[in-house]
Image 1: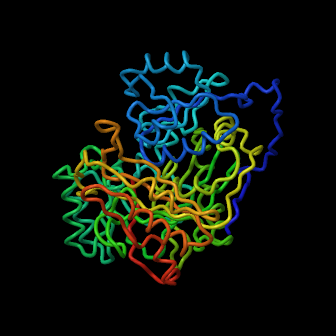
Image 2: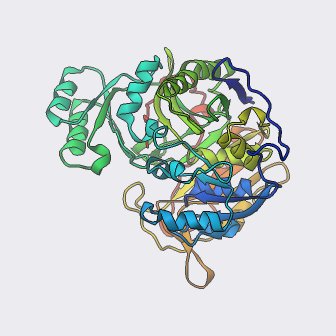
Image 3: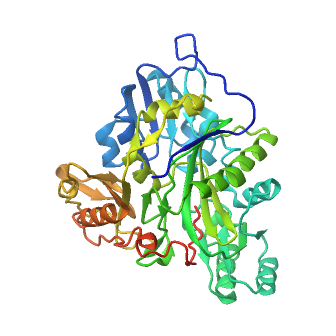
Length: 475
């Protein structure tokens, strides 16, 4: 089992801070929490937060799915920036101590900047300037290049003619990425120049990604296994979580278009201790040092999408929040008090945290609605959640994390999005957790439901060190 690593970014000593009442940033004995975001990631976080002995009242997003609504009270105020006065009044009136931000769109809108008000209220999630690593891939490339971080080589373009000339000058296969946020669907992995030309034209001329594609990044196409490495960061301390492996493409055997994620498992045996040390040393530390040179204090989750090439780990993308469906896999095995850990991260006291994971492996299989990742059908009645969760036994468990679900008529549950349910199983090893999660996902029924049956196949088929087609994950 992979062990979490805790290290300091710089050489200054991390002085212990008292948790007594004299510490103005001590976590309240009863901490009221608001979770911003309405998907499967947020349901998994809420599920774990509710297990904390420190949890006071839990508030959830006004657009929360049914799973979230079952755990907390729905916020009556919109999160729209135009409504920030009333939302801030809500936070004050309800004495919200901690705001946990799930989606990257809110971070990009400056949610953390607006509502972080220590010591009265902390926000878990980086500022707008820090999260630019995710919402502007062109800028992220500049930061990584200046820090000497190993990555896929590439260039940014805003003009189609220049982009096409660059594509025609290259002999190697290319990847075309929208520089902005596209919910995991802004990447085209191209087999030849014709596909690259079509992808660049679609983004820059036909505006296929809207404003998010006004700038594109054209990268070399790398080959190797991809892993997701998430780390908690409080400005001076890094704590790496168990590494995951996501499955981006919609079809079995990693075929078809990219999605937000069809499933994930953790820990992955691909992330050996040596690989993790390299990622920490060559990616996380220099990236955060580069931000500090720009006077940017990063607090939250730094999520590195890494490809393991023959030349070592290289960065495909950086995200600034918990991944989805990686979070479902991680929360299923998380030991200890998540609330306290998030508080210590947001308050700059992560060196005081105690963090570990249960033994075994967790696997999340995402059940999707017909049409996904394009326009998905909604409004179909869902059944089978109890049957799925009842498959868990004494030594293993199954949890159904809601994503695109909504209340229907007469107490029914209906689909409301493309990714509907993250069926997550914990068992002794990947083979058993993948089989159990797949079996449980088969218990979830609604019209047009589908899911991948091969989550974890790259390791289970013993192809972990051979070249594989890269999905070049991106948000």
